Length: 61
Image (tube, rainbow, N blue to C red; front, side):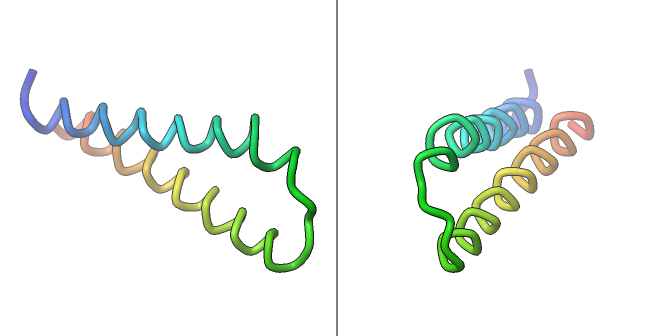
């Protein structure tokens, strides 16, 4: 495996783990006031961007 492939897979897996944690554990158990919705939106966007970046690096490498 090349280093780009390994790095891309680790980034992809960390993004998937973050999204699974958010949707399975964190979002159902929180009260949805304005600040919490904003933070959850930011965390979901970070997870999606990690998955996209990891996939891009994996496919490119």
